Image (cartoon, rainbow, N blue to C red):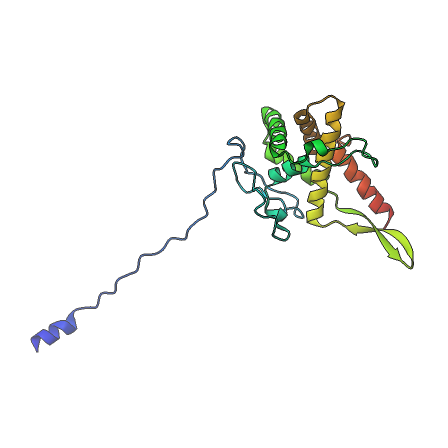
Length: 222
């Protein structure tokens, strides 16, 4: 009986489970080319979902996302610029200046971007931030579309989707670089001038002038 009473008197000890700390996302310390930080914020809310500034060292995905629909938004913005430089587009309706010499040469575009980024970094600026701001400043918000109404083709103003805004901006940056390279400048110097002109919102910059033209035509077709 005494043993039974002693067992009853002993308090039951409940073991407390150790608290699991919430795992916090660690900010990656990867740098582009082991030089440039990715601490860049996309200020344009319309482009925030399509511009990727995920930290990487080498901007080359080798087409891993090519089979996924709308996966271009996951490709790094620097890689997208390099691939646009590979196919900058012809000059003139009759192909006055062909761009076939640039196609299929990833490392040629890589060296052009790397050389331009080196010049930008010497001015104390982050080249990735300069690229993002140049894209934001030169991305059009509206354009003209030809619609068939009652048997007649009429130009109407339409809003531009975020993905197309990014595509047009990168296309104009690559076209401006390609055209300036025929004036005796090296391609890396031409890309540097185009990026800095778009970064500073200069009307003489090719991407900015194309954006102004596109939005002016859209405004007149409302």
